[in-house]
View (cartoon, rainbow, N blue to C red):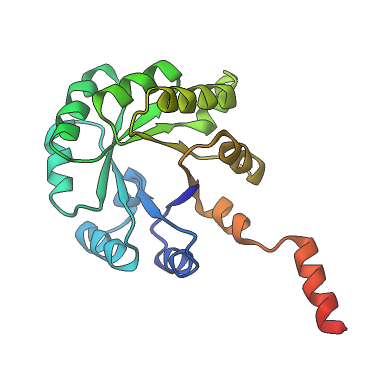
Length: 204
């Protein structure tokens, strides 16, 4: 399972890359608002890691998608799975521009996203949990649909909130998860029994 990190923390990204644990990064609109020098930010992210950089688009989907994709083949545009975006997702995908379909809350919309050619399907786990719509059953259904019809789309689950939720995603068999800094750091922490074992061995 792949780990994508939602951050612009360059040292944290570099650490994950060196360990072979990080396969890409996600930039949110908030990151762009808070950070001056957007082109410099993209350049730095492209230099420190070789995986995809996912960038959100919320309007003028096709125009902005083409513009961003022209900056680097590593850029993937994330477009919400709404009615006015289906044509843009399909057109961009047909033109070899990788699209992640975001704001996925149901297996039906995941199916439509895969049908339009989206390279990635992104169920929003944290918000699905808030709605109480049996999120892991929904994600399992999405993964089953993708597998049954052998779509090339990959399921990337957005914002698991705990290590247990990451484990459940792995058991379902999704392609990856997109995590925030705090959970990623927790993921890297040593298990208390492993730490105890090392300390005991050192004493002996």
